[in-house]
Length: 64
Image (cartoon, rainbow, N blue to C red):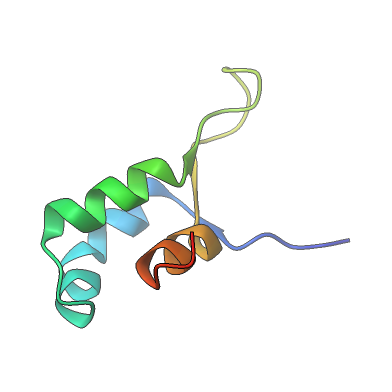
């Protein structure tokens, strides 16, 4: 089974200032990337929203 690197939107929000500083970006720029990488609930009702950390990192590096 493959594990996916996901965190909660709250955990991502907590790290925005650190990520912005490390990448010479504004908090709003980082927040926009995180929003693009946030997946909703399964079928709109099951589970929780999650942030795909791999996609965030690839976007921060300009790969995606």
